[in-house]
Amino acid sequence: MSTLRDHLMEKHVFDNLIVPEGTLGGIFGAGFIYPNPNGEQGFITSCLPICKPLLMEAEPVYHDFDQMCLFLGGDAAHMDQLGGVVTFELGDEDGHMEKFEITKPTMIYIKKGMIHCPLDFVEIFDEKKPIYFQDFTFAGVYRRYRPSEPDQPYNEHFEPIEKTW
Image 1 (tube, rainbow, N blue to C red):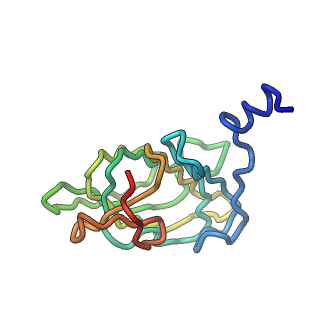
Image 2 (tube, rainbow, N blue to C red):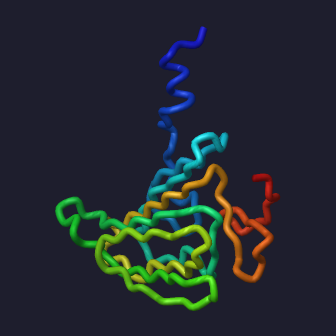
């Protein structure tokens, strides 16, 4: 017999989110990810500790949904410090790009259709105090597009996916 608690746990409370250390290429500490397995919430998020330099995204992409990227320092005694250097490129529909050097806690809003990346964690000052990268994706299914292939969606591994939305 299903209880209200069981129903709420299934639909609204998600507690099995840990990504083991080393699971995602280049992520060397345990993090968490909510992949929205049934697509019902229209929201995907992850929080990953970046402990060593990492080129997370090598090429420009865009999405057909809004996204927020949050960069936080891992030193709880100094939350006003990032603890490293990140570069992130943002652009426009015409392909003009600007590189931003992130050296303090920062949130970036990426509007639907906005070209962005590469994303490079250039330097981490102390791997015991990582940079936490949190990504908020406002879609039930993660998909990205290369500017040169606007009709082909890709998943997080750059594998082609079928457009079903």
